[in-house]
Image (cartoon, rainbow, N blue to C red):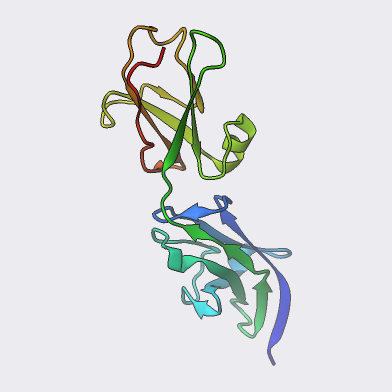
Length: 193
């Protein structure tokens, strides 16, 4: 007799939306009761199995493609009674093409320039950047050089860059470990002051 219970919980790490081509995620199947090690697990997308029955309650995807968008679910099979099965909730995953960073130049005060970098729908606010996982990498004159500044989405030229220095600037976003990078932004320059 098959005993089916809907009491497993599937979640995805990192839990960002959307995800982009080339990123990787881990699907984790947790049981609401009992010990995870007493079960085998299988993961599916849109009803098609991605794994056979495995002893680990997690599955890390290869690099994502847009074809990986869909609904995911995990199923747990009790080791000593394989007819006892627990199904999880369904989790939707959306995968978009690799994004290009957006770079904007503003002059809030006479004699100063602010460059703001963003990715997709994320704004320049710190809370938005934090929730989407993005850090921002700044480059001057060469995109292949070491980043000028890392972390903040706003680069204040006055006080950190000589007003007479000019130059060409790019930015790109990065998140995760190892870091997943967006495409570089368009360049901004040369005379910023």
